[in-house]
Image 1 (cartoon, rainbow, N blue to C red):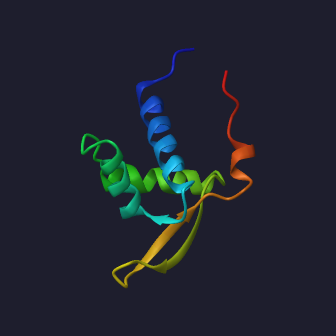
Image 2 (spheres, rainbow, N blue to C red):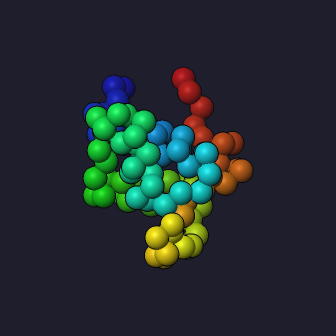
Image 3 (cartoon, helix red, strand yellow):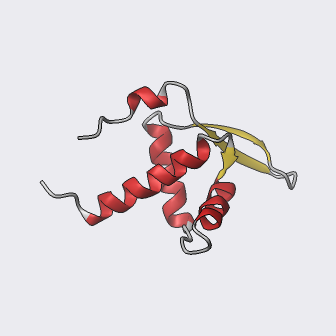
Length: 93
């Protein structure tokens, strides 16, 4: 069965998020900025795509979230990769 375009886009965004979060705890805006940075400003993930993806990954147990203080002194939700997440990723075929 062919993969739907929306599933492919979701999977790509999920992969980018997981790759960034694997480097250490980061808040949503930081993830967005890092995606822009590593893509040399080509990819700009909108909030309407980023936060549903973060919530989806958290619900699946691939991310953990905790409130903390950002660099600017504001409350932000920081995402991190739990140790058990790697074992719960689906196998590649």
